[in-house]
Amino acid sequence: MSPAFASGDRRWTIYFYAEERHRLPHAAVRGPGFAFTVRLSDGAVLASRGDVPARVLREVQLLIGQHRDLFVQAFFDTLDHRFPGTLDEAIERQRREQGGNE
Image (cartoon, rainbow, N blue to C red):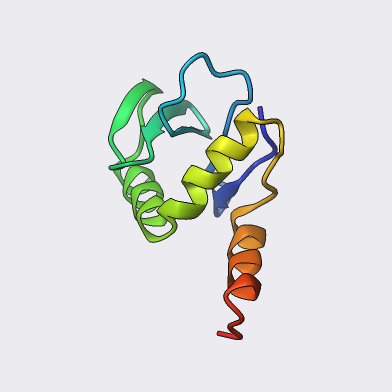
């Protein structure tokens, strides 16, 4: 499992797994009393355990939708055992590579 890629107010954390058998881009989300797998292409829940709070699902789907390219790149980096760091670090790298200061 990768280190935490993103989290939301300690209510949930997003991870990627390096030892996946398939290459469908997805992420694992864990929180107190629940876990689910979300497909990165459209935010669909592929599997879940426990009661996933609707608010958490919306937050995760929104975050993935806003940064889909970074999530997909992080998924493939993790498969190649190049752990991507955090989403905030990925956003900062992308900003620097694009030469922006926004």
